[in-house]
Image 1 (tube, rainbow, N blue to C red):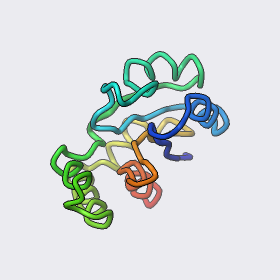
Image 2: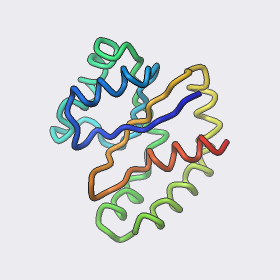
Image 3: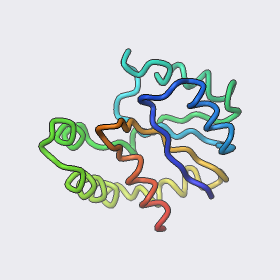
Image 4: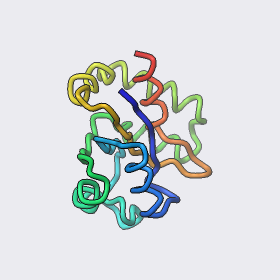
Amino acid sequence: MEIFTLSACETTAAQFFDTLLERKAELLLDVRLKNESQLCGFTKKCDLTYFTPQLAKARYVHDPDFAPTPELLGAYIKHELDWHGYCEGYKKLAAERGLTEEFRQKYGQYGCVCILGSATKKRRSHSEILRELLASR
């Protein structure tokens, strides 16, 4: 199984969907905590539900089980936690929730999965940590 990440931030729709097509993603797994605000642009949940199968020929799933807690994400965004602290917090949460096994059970049938996060030039995303955890299993 190939697993890669893509950010919902600082990208155009063309770049976003071209990447899904080029990588032959079968599943776009949205692991964002918040994916319905106006700031999401074309990556709002309701839009991706339509656009992903139409433009990328992939399935779209929003699975908040893989999102950080609001408290963990808030501490990182407010700079109360640095990247290392955020990684450790998310890894602990992933272990408590059994996320690697849950991923395999729910999505193990896909050959290529894109994990959608919200990294920016200034802030990294837990989607990157999740990909690393899944790759190591």
